[in-house]
Length: 463
Image (cartoon, rainbow, N blue to C red):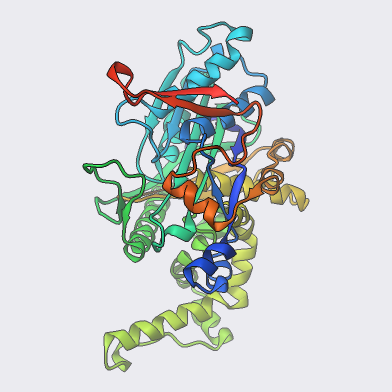
């Protein structure tokens, strides 16, 4: 018998994006990359860039503040603020403490100077899945007491070396989530498919000199993502069957169970490119794949018919490409994936915040289009290099329309300022000394301690 679904989940969400961006066309021209390869191949349009005064802590504070003010929260009632990031500012002091210090200074006059004194603050790190870990951990804590209120924030700056293969996927931003009982947005089922293996697909090792950029192998990382995803999906199904979540014997694909599918997106089109093999496997398990092949006029390449492995791999990749371009697969993409990828096209990779921006994108666009999601299931496929995948699902709540209306994701994306390539490079290398677009009332880095017991300490102010 299926376990009772506790009414715990995401009540509201807030998104912060820096006010600067680089048009991908400008980067493509500078790097002699065909623009269409990035825009049509990967779905990249713009890259969100942090200004001189911005970092993971300021972005987190901005997103959390929006949640607090929109929901008129008393900070004294917030029991925990858990932060997921791979852009940590210190190897010991949590980035979340910097964000909470900014919040405390802002709200001290209204709620007291110790308004966050009894709030549990913690950073969680596992590459791009760290904020999902923080979310699932906080859900368990909230479930223990209906009076518990928590906030989870994902905040990151995706930064790669200039002229590297990861450069054009860069981005920055933060998403904060209000977690409590009887949420207005999503109830999250605490059934989780997990897959983990220690690999070196993407990592940031300790070096003699601190570096913000990772060591990575893009193709290997894609393979790790795909393998962990497959294993986590299988684990989710196994656990779901064990508790009686599937009530009939007829096979149901998870992609059919879920109204929308929300993935971690290293680039906007990643989900639709990585899911093609799983989609075929689902059609095979359902017993309809042979009829699909006949209708599509396609034939699966047979390794025995090729003289070498390279020729077979080329034919196999061509086959997958043909399936991906078919009306059958495009219908799946349009129904399940397309709305979630649209915000990512305008921001780039947000690491831990990527999957949550995809969720906000899908919900806001569904709401704008007049789609009704109440009572429907949303599936999540999270991934973090190193490597781990988690699969879980949520049920959309009756008030979701109201909550999604307040997101304003695309209004925030539109309200930004473009920089040229030279400004981008000076921001990237740290040679830009003054902020390009400081906004009154926003938080910014004021100074960094230079000596004694304050060496490296970060101090913030309101601009």
